[in-house]
Length: 296
Ligand code: NDP
Image 1: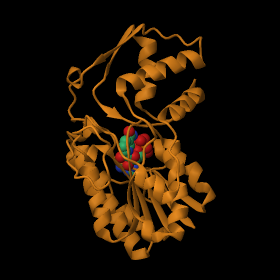
Image 2 (image 1 turned 180 degrees about the vertical axis):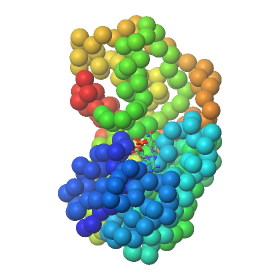
Image 3 (image 1 turned 90 degrees about the horizontal axis):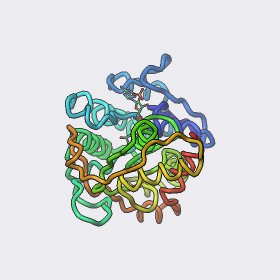
Image 4 (image 1 turned 60 degrees about the vertical axis):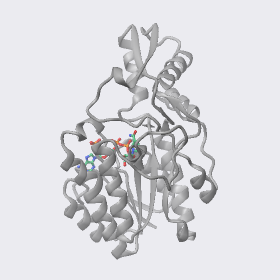
């Protein structure tokens, strides 16, 4: 199997370099790769890369993920999150290749209390959410055989994420305030990468299972409880860690105005993924504790 991995240096891209290695020959590119264009701000360049390499499977982990910045550069975000993935999908359709792509809980409006299903109506609240949704739609319209995994609150030992930010702030400040009215599941980039590899193998034998799936770790939390968990675990894993934060206080979303509106309810229902691919998704705490053990 010839695999083209795009966005190899991101949280998920880095883990995919590991998990895809057992499936076949992987060509992994970033935006500044020299030999082939992996720069999503150059849609035609990336399309040319697909034509030149003729992969069996394309895995796209590149994206414009700076949610607040996207509000002030919507066209750039649209190029990275929708236009280029759409062109990749057209090339994949021509080649008969598979396209694996990642999307987000931000395609929903965050209303209600129950986990969102793949069949639920979308309603993005931000440029990031709208451009990611358009990316999904262009992939579907292309006719390419595809797997789209919608996920949420991604963390990894590498790269910037909420858990690592909390760990740093807890060592710098006496008191932290953290949002307590948004609900979701922190999901490890390593879990996403492992699920991706299993799903590709499954789809190779069962192409009728192509489509859209929700993929998040099991369980649910708020940013506040997540932050508390990270700091408690850090204290346990590394008792000598100089944590200053004596108090972590819960606050509402309104306490932290941001350019991009976040969904309040980011819960994603994973029943379709688990039953189709025969997978178990471990509780989010396992992955977070493992990541902390690795970085501390
Ligand atoms: P990261 O931001 O860690 O990785 C994104 C990658 O895209 C980075 O390697 C980044 O490079 C790269 N990139 C940025 N600009 C370009 C460009 N012009 N051309 C090519 N590559 C570029 O994101 P994640 O790994 O966390 O996200 C993976 C997927 O999961 C994305 O589709 C994202 O939308 C989705 N997702 C992520 C969530 C999260 O919480 N992070 C939540 C839900 C979904 P560089 O780092 O050098 O800028």
